Image (cartoon, rainbow, N blue to C red; front, side):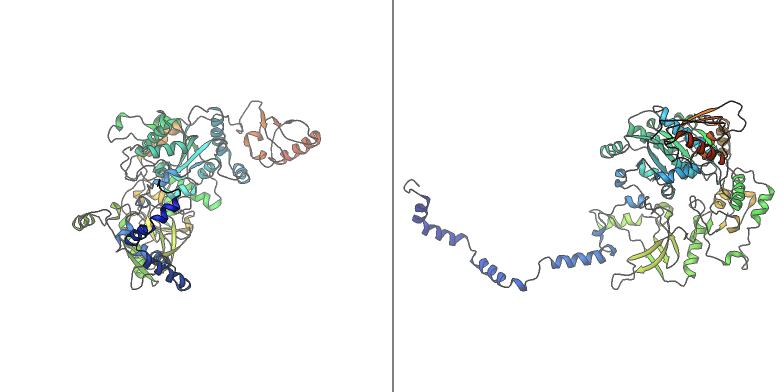
Length: 613
């Protein structure tokens, strides 16, 4: 390079040598010619991605319905079937407002005296006792308005979590399932399993401001699950107090069927070190019982009968009334000719037989979908087959997953897994089969089953136990069987809202019974009820001179609400502040006359406010 003054002079001097080496190692002339030919025919060339797009469309149309291709199932999330998907941890289940303001105020106005008492007790508690948890049990018979009261109890500025043990109950109250909210494995063992760090950090972030948990359907929650919830909240909150220092309000009735694979919530845990531990229910919870039935006319009479039946206080007149709805199931002239009504049985075997009968007798289009099991993972065919051979056909051992689905058009069916609680796609959600879609040429296997979800369409048959939480407005045929099961008659009859819509098979009135344990616990709870933090001023037998002060925040806005406040109706002096009246003297007179029209017996009305121009 030193012999040349520029790079160009150096290149010119060795150009022949470079050309020789380039011809030896860079053979691109043929590729250049091919590229030129393709460029000339560019207009006629096909898009290279066309084949990929076609294959993608074929895969989308047929791939997910091909059970032979096991590679399609390698990434299948079994948690969907088991109800323990990892995604449930990231769901925002903490609620701040359940109802719009107008609907919320209308709900509050509809509460009776008993409901108002527990409503104000809980609301007052969270405004005053911010450091002390509240443990309350809201109970009551059929038709007393437990669900309405639960929807009304929504403390301002308090983070709440609404849960229920079943997906359907959780959807009805706008909440989430206990398994999803507290990440409880669905294996029924209830052996506590701590969260991994990712799950724990996620739940701690979601529940950082959590103050109170409402659990509806508390009778279905057993003592081991209840203890599991307490331990989970202790872990998430980092607090060793019971339930991590979070307030718990339980709603329900103890006169129900015993929890499956668990013990009564009020009994001591017998397994493991349970007998040495504390009883969370006995130690913490006091009951407030609603007794006023809110239903009308015939529904009220039926509700009163159910409330007597659930506690074993039914009379001979009650028995004669329900015997009128009993028929002879062997008589072909009986009411059973109408098989459009859903049937309730006590055993799964009876349910299977009846559903099979409906399927065989219908003339509608039918389809049988066989389950195809496959083993994921790299293993030999022999080992895979051994694993498949061990899969039982008994649905009770496969998380209620049937090996064969027998479907027919226009025959109702029900969802057997919790898919999306918020949308109502939960266990027990009813739907009507509308169409069978066969998309794979030459295959007799249905690709898609199109269904229409409708609460009015209940499956032809189910067990009384699985019917809990289901309302059957059209009526039901109920077979109580020959076994003696506590509360089975009450649970079955409660599914229908009117006695005239019930057809009873095998009444077996001598098998009507209540649980001795549940009855004893209710007697204990009634002996020491929940003390209210606010005195009940609505009692007619009061003898004291009473003065009530209330910050009403616009009297015009709450003019319709005030007459429904029972504590305000019977006081001697009512003081209202922040009324926001424009002309104090004239408006006070008109307000006074308006309140008197609503039956308020106050002797003096005082408004304390700045007069607005």
